[in-house]
Structures are given as C-alpha cells and as structure tokens.
Image 1 (tube, rainbow, N blue to C red):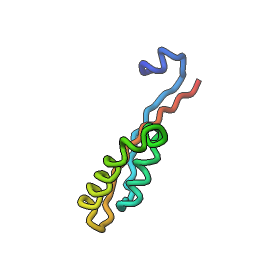
Image 2 (image 1 turned 180 degrees about the vertical axis):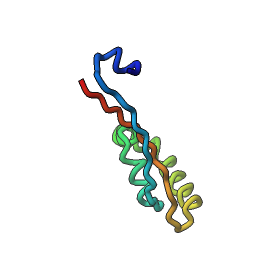
Image 3 (image 1 turned 135 degrees about the horizontal axis):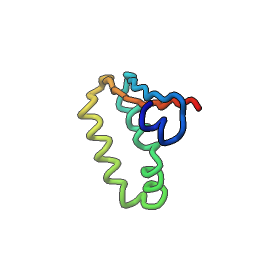
Image 4 (image 1 turned 90 degrees about the vertical axis):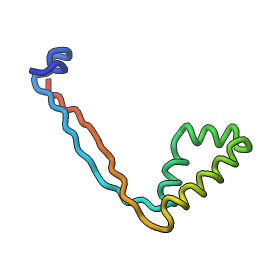
Length: 83
C-alpha cells in the first residue's frame, strides 16, 4: 500500500505516466499560446501595452518554425484510486 492509499483510505492506487507527440506549425502554437487564460486577460485589459510583445512573438515564431511543422512532446500523469 502506498502513501496515497494510506492517507486517503484507498484500497488500491496507481500513478500512470504517459506522453503524446503533437505536430505544431507556427499558427497552431500561436493560437495555443494566445488561448491561455493569463494571455487572454492581458490582451483584454492591456492590449496597447502588449501589442509590441505580440509582434515580437510573431517574429520569433517565424524564425523558429521557418515554415516547418515541429513535434511537441506532452507528458501526462494520471492517478487511479479505488476505495
């Protein structure tokens, strides 16, 4: 029995780790970055002050992707518990 099982009175617990590779081009990554809640809040409240930063982001992504698609590795953890 592991620590989570003892602490929460579970009969069985396991933590599973896995990963997935996603394909990203410049536009997909840019949309992902801009969809984050902190970014949305900044855009909503202070668009004029971050406009130059968004232009820099676009230029940086151009130089990174250079018209290509790249792989991004995502790692995940899942905890399974049975009482």
